[in-house]
Image (tube, rainbow, N blue to C red; front, side, top):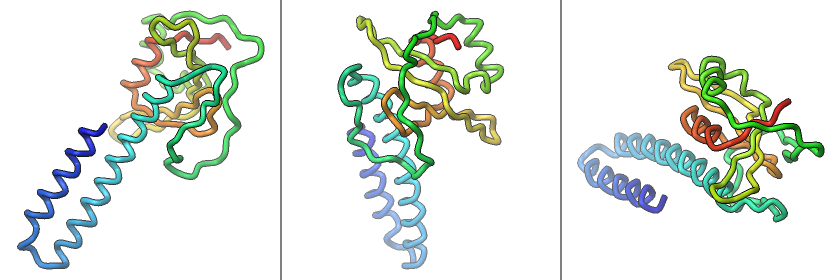
Length: 170
């Protein structure tokens, strides 16, 4: 992430140097647009680092508070909790992965446990939302155990998570 931020800073510096010959109003328009793009890239980096931080530092009995601020004000949800009587679980089969890719709405409300390699405990999460763009790009809202906020991941990231997870039967 530090490398990404440094690259963005260098690009901002180069862009500022290149526009110095432009009229003042054009400079301001370019700076405003580049600042908007800069903020959008930081939000994306934030989401990725949030997911990695939560997955890497999860402790079942510890407080799962994150040092990050919420990305946007969304309706408050209840913190996600594991069911008191755990349903049966199984590894996600290739057929299920294919089925989820064909009909992403099947994932809504599904609960999984993401297993760390070499760790018997895992990170409990649920797919709580789906957004599809005009280009058919899919973004999923994920809620993790103990959290009220959700993070958004793309379909590739969700597929990788599901491959390393077990599915809880409804």
